[in-house]
Image (cartoon, rainbow, N blue to C red; front, top):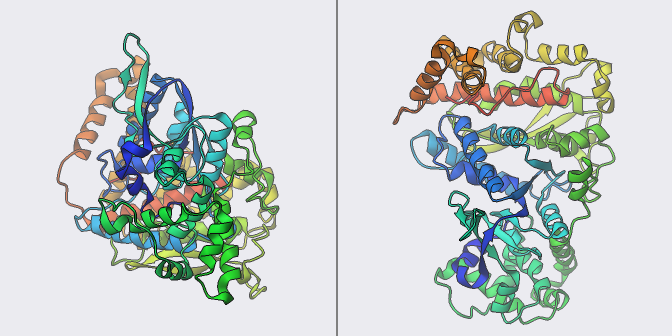
Length: 574
């Protein structure tokens, strides 16, 4: 979620609202989405060339090694797909537009922050390699994180300002003051700790006249979060005289936060405060607004999900987001991160969002090339009952079911309607898809990627899917791939096997040092400073990554008839 202006406000009062921690010998619940974004954007990674996945992998590994050295046991919780209500759609569209502007800025030599397309998949693969326990929630993870942290009485690590509102027993540690790169040793011992700051909800409430902490969810809703952005709230704010109290050093940026907290501190409980909000609004809208505000305040209550069950038994149910139409195997695969949130959005909402890369904004978006793969994915998903509120699904029943895709058009976004491919009857029941033979699942995958099994037979197992995707890519005239593009791609695919050979204990693998020499030469070329970004070349490789992403998702949906490739060593970056 996220509350506008709150994090910068509390950090302005770091000496009042935060305590110093020497974090060691504890469990910690980590907001996975916040962590991989933080590590991606704060580690001087190259964001223009489509990946730098090997450098990102190194950073993630070092982060968790620091935790292990301090006997901190991490549990990573990842967001899943969008909530059934799709209440964040407008926020997601706004972020998609912002991402397009930042990608454009990067493409013309400016600044910006855009995560590479496969960063989430790389992050999950590193977690698996390091044996870090993780779970993927069925929708947004914040409440589940809070509930688990309170169950285990351990801190939360995130950068989301919503954790300043949740009543956490052991507090919230912001990522930007979590000094994992600067481990220290307790004097007179060999015990390591990570210096951190821990937010105190009690200190915040004390600062505002011992304010009742149960008023804070109403503050979050009125201040504006990702779920609520009502014009009537602006009407209330324009009519009520918010007491500023001590002016903030940041001036008007914190005006709303400071004013609302001072105003709310006058009331004993949320009911009294809410009544005072509603009296400033037109009578005809009060009932609707009250219902919406109360529903949004409920987002800060404990979740009914029990993530501890997943970490102890490998499965959990979440009644808040349970959809009876989803087959048990799909729910299990989603929780284990074996299926992407892209799949759950397509299943539950019949709507997906295609993320923009650093590409040529004057050309059709790079995802267009992988449309036929997505249509096969949609074809496998159509026979699960959609959410009842999706009216579009019921329109034109004789026609193939349609899915909405939010995609880039020039420098803006557009929602396009895409039909699903009609598949053979034995593929039409999603609940029985895992019962299909390996051969049948592999045939569907290879037919979709337009590649013959005989071509893949001599290819090492780990490279079969990337090579199959490359065959699909070069057959599309839209890609405009040239021989040197394909040669560069194949060299990039060698990085993983070469890295494995160099780090192998088997001395025969290094006979003559050829592997190490080639790896070092490729790294040297990659590290050359000041390389000019050729937009047409960048676009071609963005298209390849789109093909690989959807090839991965289709392969996962078919229970991996081809081995999942190792993405951690730079597949697809330029």
